[in-house]
Amino acid sequence: MGMNKNTVLAWATFIMIIVGLGLIAMGAFRYRDVSGWGFAAVGIGFLANAWVFNALKGRV
Image (cartoon, rainbow, N blue to C red; front, side, top):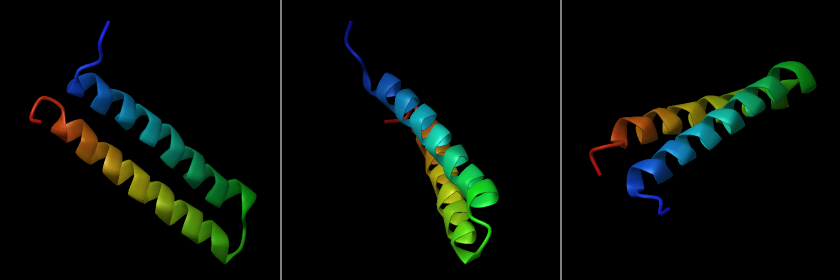
């Protein structure tokens, strides 16, 4: 069973969503000072990249 490019993009999207939500959760619950804002901002960036990967499925 080989993985084609759509499957790779699907897995990358799924992993980036998990990492993004984890970073947002760390920013919200673990770090209460300024560093929490940084974790949340990077988490939002991961979700934005996952959105782009999801939009590329079927087009690449």
